[in-house]
Image 1 (cartoon, protein in one colour):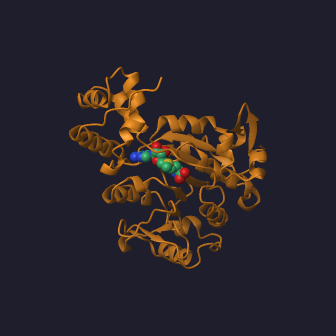
Image 2 (cartoon, helix red, strand yellow; image 1 turned 120 degrees about the horizontal axis):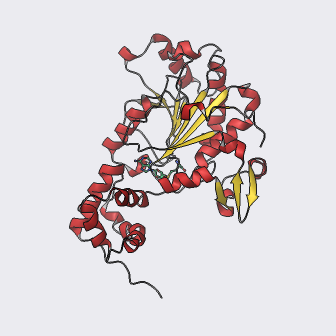
Image 3 (cartoon, protein in one colour; image 1 turned 180 degrees about the vertical axis):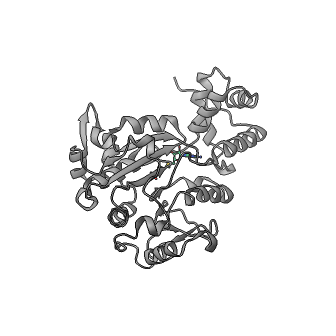
Length: 333
Ligand SMILES: C[S@@+](CC[C@H](N)C(=O)[O-])C[C@H]1O[C@@H](n2cnc3c(N)ncnc32)[C@H](O)[C@@H]1O
């Protein structure tokens, strides 16, 4: 039996829900998305025994329902993702990996953050490239952290179990064969690859703590859901984690023009950004390294330009207490 269509929210409840979502997650719920609450929240309303969306919002407005509030926020997020999404940023990351691997002093792990990683395809794509770069990395450890607001998305990321259509979107057959095994109707990421990634719930509206520094941050296809001031705040927090020769990768449809002074686009590379430091905060060597990088994005800077150039010592806190530090590609799949 088909269910009666959900009655739309009153303008007042819609406005309250929009303000609530923005405060909790940064998500902007515009009038043009008036259909979204019915699409995403009807199931929760039924489970909660609410007569409809209006009653669900009334319950939220009453407060004292922290778990329900989180569920509603998470249900309103869009978790669309795929392996090697858009291809080009990942091809560029492969070069970045080799360059940064050569630039860091021995024993210093590279640290990669997949921020708003959704169901994990982005972080696993990065892990596959790290595993494939075994020779270039010469045993250097690489730590990968995947974070997202959505617990449900993170649970799927941890499981590393994907449906056939998900692995058929963007994943080259050779990598599927090497890093996945068939399980039921789907494909499970190998244990070795799963051990390379640490997962953590994190809201981009907050500072990641303890974060340390990241050499590379992927924050793709999430800023577009935020308004400019929220984007600026997120970018400010990301910039604080990056060294001068680190890089930020955004989604193809996302631009920082007019949003943040903290990043500069790499010439000819859509969606790849280098951090900018104000004169007082930037040691001269860091500026030189960043300038070299912008002029010539791909090739490696001279060996030894690492910790000195970035103002960074070898001792940095590890992701997940170092649990995820894996000698790149050192485990067989
Ligand atoms: C469209 S997915 C992008 C996934 C992946 N980065 C990609 O490009 O394929 C957007 C993700 O951002 C997450 N998200 C939305 N608001 C967030 C916030 N305030 N903090 C952290 N993650 C958030 C959502 O849960 C969702 O998984």
